[in-house]
Image (cartoon, rainbow, N blue to C red; front, top):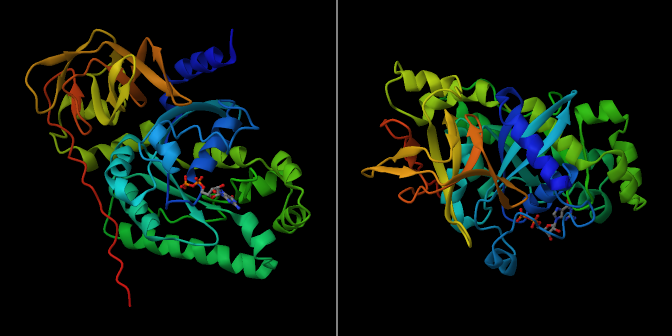
Length: 395
Ligand code: GDP
């Protein structure tokens, strides 16, 4: 059996176990390194080769994106990662970082429960960092922070340990100030500020494929002094091998992002205003794979062979080929032609996709991004509001 086939099979097995699923987005200001980091994760999970990670830009699937060098469409990918002796299924949605595509970022946030916010260590938090955080928090999506391009502080800016520490701490302070300001009125969210000690902050270099966090330093025994020494001596391959970025980030994802069972009871009342005493509300809160099908479509993509493919989050029930489903805002039903998941940018058809996962579905001809697709007629999800960039006034 080919490697890819094995990964698909493992994903299918894990799809049935919501406790070990993490639905996540990576979000960042443009050029802060989201694409390079994503490729690291895919390589770490065995989805693309290690050598080509960073060059391949696997998530940039559209020709247009490659030409323009920016990510413009939210693409999805599923991967597996072993953490504390348990294999996890990580469904990752790529979000556009460019200023014009805020609507796609917001939609992607509806499908996920955790957002890894990438911030360039040199530039610090930028306007889009604020926008993506606001989008995530409004959807009840928990943030963690990865401070990228730390290699530049060491090798290019030649910062000393103290100077570097001060800079990194100030990035964390800024991000926490934003999170605090955005969540202080939200009574369903506990303290979601990020912290080095708790392990919700990672640092590193997506370009040179190394990363650290407090838990990883405890595990590998590597501290910042040694990292600075190796980075200065240009021993980046050694750094990558001893403290690979993908392990640090994927461990953080498994440890600190909620699984669907923990996330849905909090997220459903936030994004759905139907009768909270109804059976369907209970099924969504419980991530009930035997409940009625409820799919929130977050993206429609064109497949050259299959035509329109709707992707989105299955909040309840199990999606299967042949089901006749209602599409909010339209009359009649659509018939599901195929169900699948995205693996390394390609769609793989599977027999069924249960609640708690992100599915790719064909046959939903009336669905648009934002549609609620369900086995019974129901109150649709709240519309996904586009949050535009904060207005920057020049002094
Ligand atoms: P995105 O717009 O957030 O997806 O950013 P990209 O991943 O496309 O990266 C933008 C630029 O920053 C590219 O030229 C990358 O090679 C570079 N880059 C990304 N990560 C790092 C890093 O950790 N260190 C350095 N020095 N450059 C990086």
